[in-house]
Structure formats: C-alpha cells, structure tokens
Length: 385
Image 1 (cartoon, rainbow, N blue to C red):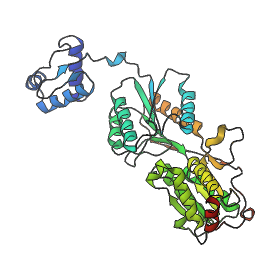
Image 2 (cartoon, rainbow, N blue to C red):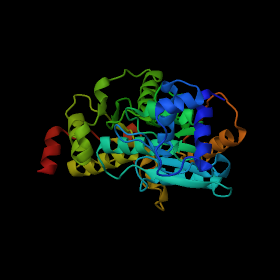
Image 3 (cartoon, rainbow, N blue to C red):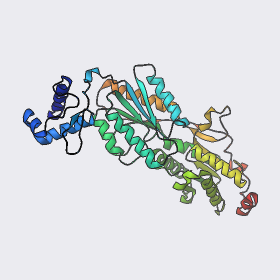
Image 4 (cartoon, helix red, strand yellow):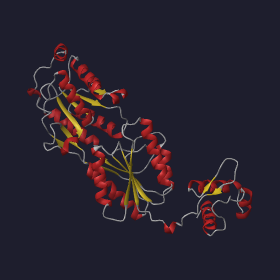
C-alpha cells in the first residue's frame, strides 16, 4: 500500500473513531507532517484526496474542516451500473440499447444509474453534462462500472483517466473513445454496413452515388464515410468528391432547408447522382421530405438509403431502405462485457467488438432503368413556384 493511501486511511480511521470529529478543523499541515513523519507536500496531497471524498472542506486561507465521517469501504455495496446515453432518452437507438443493458443487469444484484444529455441543448452544454456525470462516478463508491455513449467532447481524456485511477471498469458503446483511451468498445461494424448499403445501390446499376453526412466527428460517421468510399472504389467506379456532401453546422437548426439545398445542388450538376446514401435515417427522412417539396420522386428520380432503421416499430417497417443497427445487441453485449470486467477483477487486453448490421430493402431503392430522366433545374423551380 502506498504511503499516501496509508495516510488517507489513517486519518479516516481517526475520524471514524471520534478522535477528530465533524466540525473540527484538522491539525495544521506542520503538525500532521510531524505526527506522521512525512513531508508537508505529502500531507497536502492527502488533504486534497480527503476533500475529493467530501470528508473535509477547505476554505481559502483556513485549515480544512471535517464535514462528515468517512464510510468504511466494507460497508459500501458497489451495486450500481452507470449508463450515459446519447443524445437523449427519446432517441430510439438509446432506448433499445438500454433494453439490451437491462436484459443483462435486470436479473442480478446490480441497479442501473441512467443519465443522458439535456434534450436539444447546445453542444457545449451537452459536453459539460457528460463531464459532470463522469466526475460524479469517481466520487460515488456505489458504482461498480459504467457504460458510456461518448460525445467526443474536449477534456474527456482527463475525466476517463480519473475513472481508471478509481479502478472503475468502463465499456464504450456505439463509437470509439479518443485515441488516447484504451477501453472495451461495442459497436456496429459501420464500415462493413456502409459498404453493404452502397453495394446494394451498385448492384441496382447506380454509378453516380452521393453520400450526405451531418456535421459530426464521431468515429461511427467517419467509418460510414470510409465504407462508402471503399465500396465505390472496389466496384471500379471513379470517386467523385463533389458527391460527398456534409450538411453545415448551422443545419442543426434547419435540417429540412439544408437538405433541400443539397438536392437543388445535385440536380444542377451536369452528371447528377442517381442514388443517395444518407449517413442516418434522420437525414434520409429529411431528404425524402425535401424531394417532395421539390417535386422529385423516390425512387423514380433517385434511390435513397438510410442507416439505423428508425422505422422498425412501424407495422410496415417503413418504406426506406436502410441499415438495421443491432441496438439491443449492442447494449446486451456491452453489459455482458462490463459484468465480466467487474466480476473477473483481472487486467485483460481491451477488445473492440463489432456487430454485423443487415440491410433492410424497402421501396426507396430501385434499378437504374426504373428511373426516368432527371428533372432539370427549371422543372424543379416550376414545380415549386
């Protein structure tokens, strides 16, 4: 046991025994250093640790005051599993992942501690909420482990390393954490799924295939882009960078207007796309709505593929051809992996577990020969005037 840890436990025990009581101030640093025969620098580090635990409170230019008696670790039952869900609990993917997590932890001694980002908040608010949640886990002795759907916020590296120092096992879901973090990850094989989606369009005869992505730097989005590119190149089709379009950041406030402009831009091209692969179903559904506004038909004027299968609970399954992310399996697999980490108590090599995602074929895609000639830019304006 380190000298620092031994000193922390010694002071905790003195407080538990009533030698120093709540409301009292700790002896001065010089007195503590003399009592334990250590340096004042080490005493300062010990006091900071006690302050983090909430055992003492230190005001400016004052000796730390004891705020509560520490709880003996033997009396603490670490029976909570912390879950951070992105973007919010109304999200279908998040709900299905929670169902998967619950299926594993619901029948044993663990309870779920669930938090999520504030709905429809600015990015900096969402990122700070995640950091606050992770920080709260370090100070909560009842937490046995955590499952985190990470936002990619700055400063998360430091927050995660605090979890490591507290020996709290963590499994990430849906997307990879920052490169500096080594941890278990459970997610869809986004590259393979994207290749499958684009390969479906290629099999239907399409060669000018566009991809529309949102303003998101998540690894899952980047993997889908790489899958799109690799499918195009593997088919021997020239890669056109003008057909890879990212919605601007301000489109978060007006996705419909942004997707309408994207379609207008595509139709103005000399050789416009005959098919579009959307980064997710939300973008795909906005593209579908914008197509109706512009008088374009799907799949007659262009085929459309999404990613997620958000319409899976609709009796018909919806009319959008899409990739069906295995959300429940992601949650259940992550929960089983975390449970293994908690109960094995062994250091193991971290694992990236990639789950397959099938293609759901619906009415939004068709063979290239099914598609009539593109409407001209003039035709679009005429239909919307």
